[in-house]
Image 1 (cartoon, rainbow, N blue to C red):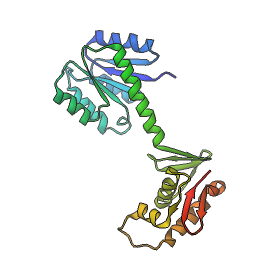
Image 2: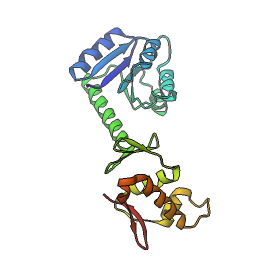
Image 3: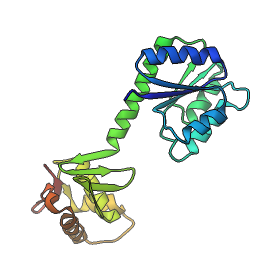
Image 4: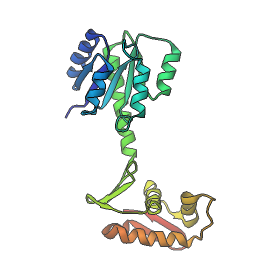
Length: 225
């Protein structure tokens, strides 16, 4: 399904311009002239990107951006700001609030579409980083969950962190000291054999995928497919 772009701009001709060109570029599009309309829409739909005008009659666009970034379920949506205000301080503030890009009116439609593609690519790359696929295992780093063939595996926080560390550099051997340092730094005095206990429990829970976690005798552990 084509990616969905939502836009908030009080100028009807701008929204029409965006609708025509973004649909021609292969996107779905929804436009809004007031923040309330956008907020109601976001309760039932989650666009892939939001184009946000800063100069609105009912609310400052910066406040809308602030609201999005503080709202659960909306904070991950990329935002490109569109505004007639060229003041550098506005641009800096918008980016500090979490906007992904900033374009000053009047803007080139071709440039806008290019920036949309660039922001969406970056979003996709971030999402890939937040998931680790290891054989039949899939680790969701945001939800702190791991599944095997779609079935959830209940790991302790420590077991999850160990597997995440090993899987992040598959093939590399981590010593017990390195694993302990990753888990607790220098704040907790534990013996290195504690790692062996956690690894043993981890392997039991991984079941048929336990062979992915390998012991390198006299050195430590690694993950290898």
